[in-house]
Image 1 (cartoon, rainbow, N blue to C red):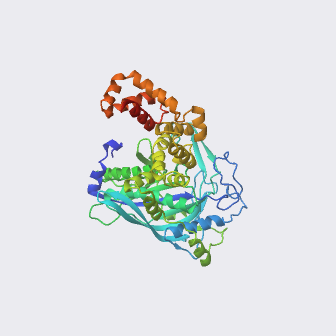
Image 2 (cartoon, rainbow, N blue to C red):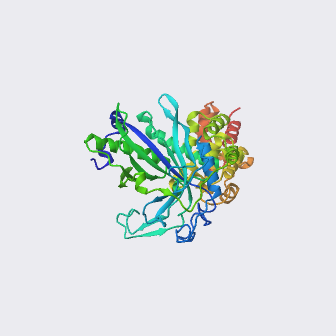
Image 3 (cartoon, rainbow, N blue to C red):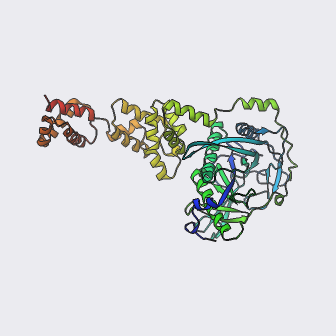
Length: 505
């Protein structure tokens, strides 16, 4: 089997011979104040093992109690995914040993999920234009998260090469919703894009519901991508692999693409695919083998004896249905029309994760074009350089709107505005504070501007003579000289007017 991505067949070569079948399993940490079955805090970033109790550590004699808010969130997610909501469901024990499982079993749902048999739709771009793909939802079920293992002493942070491991159980017991799709079969060339679009759409939906921030870079939303291949013209599914804990939209697309290429290479040699979990490596863009994938019977599921069944009243479900937000796809279409964006402009905003930020900036007083320019320009580049999400770059929608207002008022020109944004991103204060501290306001004093214009004319008499002769194209050279002498703080439009006034009849 080829050892590196470079040795694999290309994606187009792989899908010429095989059709991929995908299944996406997405885990979402719910934004509850307390854990799924106990009263411990879920606050992120606390010292290791300070947010634990006998229940989430599985100590003898402790008893779990279901978090009502988590159940409510699960129902709202199910409804938003067009699922059936179970009239009666129960928890089960999923038995397996892992160091970060303090009880040696996970409380989850097995054959009776709270939500099942739903669907959602995503849109992907094709050569023939935008295409809508319906994705079936098999189930959405409640469970608890595990703890966190920290492997120390190695170069990669993985258990391979580590000298020892540390365990933090603060995360153990945090409420999770696992959303599992039905098999996804689309035109082969669209598979990676559909996988990305689905996770992106799901993230937007979760955020719109307000049940989680769904920050993939913080592990609040994690995707397990199942991929199998079947030869062209056949119906039977191939053996699947499950690439675990993929934590960005770009990585979802890349991981699916890589697995299609890798599995095609294996099958081309006459070997068989091993049903296993695989690790995604962001740096190399490759997956590596994890552990042989268990089947359901390997977990020895049985009903959780310490929890009563959950039976959501139909009146409660109906009431929660009224709290659902505008579907993300409908919201995008509405905002695109309101903002007068082209399909390409709106796609860029969505792909950058900037839709909420642009909307908030407009609400704070900016126009749509200006809001998009800043968030997809300087701010996006800064966020990428720092490796943080756009909303963590260090500037707020209100700040961006204030910069736009200062430009409209004539206090700043575009060049100075960029310096102001740069200062805010650097932590130098609000836009007004940066303007004052750096002395960035536009020079609007007529006498000062006139003096700068006269100096530029005197320094370039040949250029001045061309303008007197009717060559208006030469005005730019004098404007540039004035802008340089005023450190870019002159009003270029007014400078042009003053030059023309002095050099033309």
